[in-house]
Amino acid sequence: MQDSPESLGRQLLGWYDAHARVMPWRVSPQDRAAGVRPDPYRVWLSEVMLQQTTVAAVKDYFHRFTARWPTVAALAAAPDAEVMGEWAGLGYYARARNLLKCARAVVADHGGQFPTTRAGLLTLPGIGPYTASAIAAIAHDEPATVVDGNVERVMSRMFRVETPLPAAKADLTALAERLTPAQRPGDHAQAVMDLGATICTPRSPACGICPWSLSCRARRAGVQADLPRKLPKTAKPVRSGIVWLGHRDGAVLLERRPERGLLGGMLGLPGDGWDGAGGDAPAPADWQDLGEVRHTFTHFHLILRVMVARIDGPVTRGDWTPHLRPSDLPTVMRKAWDLAHPALDPTPIPRDAMDS
Image (cartoon, rainbow, N blue to C red; front, side, top):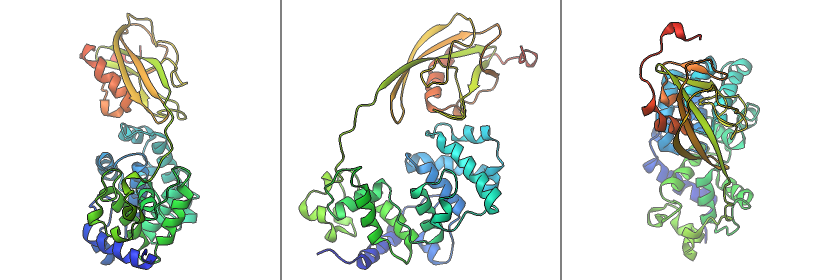
């Protein structure tokens, strides 16, 4: 027989108090008990960064962002290009654009303070139901139910939900809501996520050390490793295209991508339209085919031919960048750069040639 929600909550929080992961955006349960309050800005920033991304990948970005822009007001005042440059490589670039929109709305409409309720947070641009619940629970102790992939996995096993995802999402959210306590809801939300990330893992769950092991219906039936069930994924389509890496006296030709669309607002190499935003080669030149790079986006696989040439005449697209930081490029463009840059002329471009 399964324990009551109150009993399960006590078991989980006792485990969390002893085993909570240490993360740069988190206030530990001990500090929380001592009265330290989480900073809503840091909670929000971490949640946006963690969407579709791992904790390991996010940590360095989080440290750089908070060192450079320690408050939401500082981020709101930052130039778009600088924020997009710091975001480069983290992927899902619409998040960075929405990050700026949200920061500026918090400053302009809320005096630089995040709303303290889930309903208020949902009025901000770029904040959806999950992020609003996470901020409300973690930063403000509103008993909002926070459901990510880890929580779905834990709920599907605890209650042996056989319905495959994504059809089971509503049922799993309802089950998680039943367990969300009025006391310490922020710690509870983080505890369930930690449980899924460290013990109730997708493969080989460590049931022997799980605080909910005795109550887990899937474990009792011996099917914990089979849940949650998922519908078969459809094969991703494959797109192909070209990028042109033009260089001249140490400078590289780059263009700022349109705000809307794939890799929106990022610096990139001129392309041929594989993404709906490109066109022809940026200049007549002796273009050399250096090979291909491959990259996978959310909805498709991409194969890009990388063309490189020295450009001595005028260009029809882009701007000369004399001091390129490869880290400012999105990952797919960085792959093209890594393939092509050994062929470039390392000599710096003279200042008086920049306008030609």
